[in-house]
Image 1 (cartoon, rainbow, N blue to C red):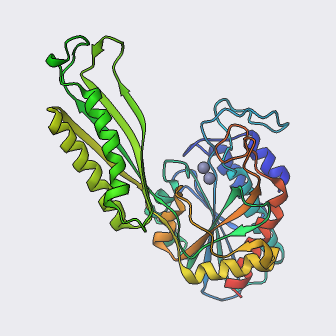
Image 2 (image 1 turned 45 degrees about the horizontal axis):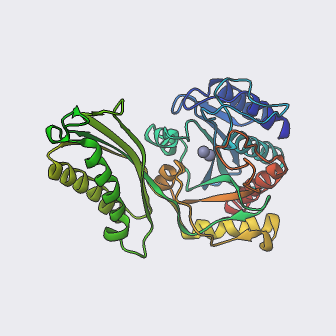
Image 3 (image 1 turned 90 degrees about the vertical axis):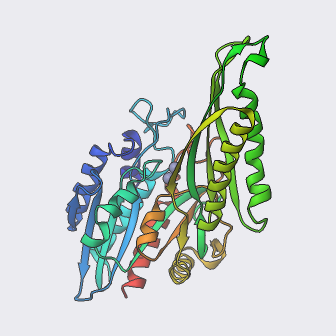
Length: 374
Ligand SMILES: [Zn+2]
Ligand SMILES: [Zn+2]
């Protein structure tokens, strides 16, 4: 698994371009004796292993894409591809699931079908959604679906899980504010979009503090402000971009409505015009309680109950495994990658997956299949 992981780390591929990765994964799965299917979402790979005459089935998912990040750590197996890096540990996720497939093909004791799903484009582009839309669960009917992600900041080899929402929904928005430009010394001749944008950014912060119930979680962040070219000209337009995150769809509706209302209202108050592009990217990742209980029990059997957190607080980050959990009940767990400081956080240019947890993740997958398809 370490050799696979480091080989994958050296050759990262970005969303929907995981051709070489897909080739390698498919070749290994076929070599273990699995039925291999390719082509869902382009580079997606599904390997199927059957035992006995049982009709029950389970799907296990790993992600395959790297990020457009330039690696800075001087590892011997560092990325050989410019501006591409496995900075989220998907190299490790693939290696663990491949290890589990090999072990289960060799000596697995279960009755039914286990589908090993390798998805493209987890980062930003929703490869998991595309696989579901293209019929993942029609071609590979699975009663339940399970996912796993390494988690810096959680002790290495510890598991964390929770029933219900575990990661947030993600919406992205762009606000294009248009006024009238003028000389910087003659503001009375302008409709200043910079002043209007400043009011808008401040007012957006009242959505969470004044529109969302204080016992619910939501985030509204303006992360990009673009407008103007120089010191002494009031520009004609300003563009704001940002994101919103939340767990519950009704909270999401309040947030979207708030952004649209405030953008339109502030622009109107200043005599400016506004266009709003609001996109729903990922829904919340919601663990089915029974599946979460099984996942926690299996994790505790693998690493011990003292290393398993069965009810951790959720994260406001997002995950496209959410689309698979909308289609099938299941559970998404975090596996501790060790400390997150010193550039070891996810998406950091000096991040590296912790190879010590490869056997832990693989053992969890094997035991999960043998438990659910006992
Ligand atoms: Zn990531
Ligand atoms: Zn990731």
